[in-house]
Image 1 (cartoon, rainbow, N blue to C red):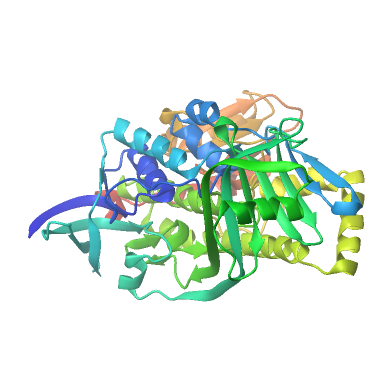
Image 2 (cartoon, rainbow, N blue to C red; image 1 turned 180 degrees about the horizontal axis):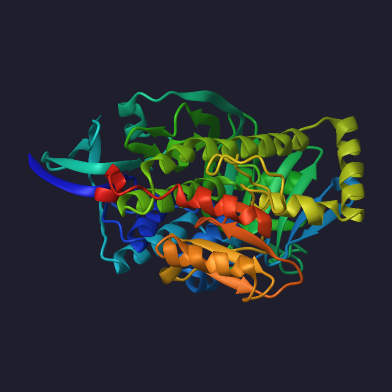
Length: 497
């Protein structure tokens, strides 16, 4: 048996594990990545990269590559059968990229390799033993050799059947989502090109016979998906039947590349942190595919954890900041499960409820509610955290724990891992002076950006884009004191690493 050590061991090299490792590496933290598979994961699987994921890609220098390789839909188009249709425009702030998961993984792996970190494939974790100061992980390889890795911290990103979670004895309660889905990818042709199916929109057909998704993919392919009865075969003929029964008619599914069946669970880990071990992505939570929120929930796990863990490792933050990971991400998980549950129930309602649903959707569309509320919800802007970081009860606007497209952290490497403090009222105000003093006192933690404006106020953004504090000038001293309290004292363990 060989022995080695690392600062952070990431178990699992799917998109969440790769994103976690790439962010830590960007923040100057030594990281090792292992995966039980012998090669990178393939398949399109999760295809929607909503703004929270796009922000992470931007911070890792992948924005242009992702945009080049993907499709950016201009709208979500809901076809309500005889009830007409509703088109929800997607502004730049709300739009996802459509990119097959294997391409997302490839981009993240490239970003990681550019920082000198390669995935150790064919390395299966068999044992995880934490203690007060380290975690000892035993892993085996196909040739029968084993290695013992001593890590300061471990991040389990090893999916639904997480070995890290199992070794830690963490419960994964929940149930199977009561539907089986057929997923097929290939070309769609009709008498007039794609028969009116725009390649610039994601289409949802809410027919009497069921719901079908038709989404454009890079390269001119389309994805077709929908819930099907038990016993349905994964064949191109069944995909065509789904298209005929629920689509607009007159379309042919050709040049078939993928046809598969899948089911999903709705489960959440009993704990997202156990001592020096953390769970992210599918190792922490799984839910129905409705709404395309998979990576939009998993990769923000890594964004929440990365800056906190890097801050502790580098002595910038007190270790207690890691206690906020579970309650914050658990709140986001519950919000997503509630939203996807509502969407699932609306998709399978009976005839009378369908008429009410269709009438309601047309009314919401006519009043602009879908554009103002529904699109931002899918885009992740309605996700919010309890204010456990500062422990405040302020009801200022923007509220602590929320996100807003008006305030997005600048993605430069120089600012990585730092709070970004925006003050209004100009450079010569008392507020700007105090903010500058705070930045000078905590240069590794705070970057100050004074802006003009008619009133003196501030917004303090966390490194992951959520609001830490905000308000008029008289509230700034309290926020500054709470931020300074996150810094370890010279005698604390984090300060002496």
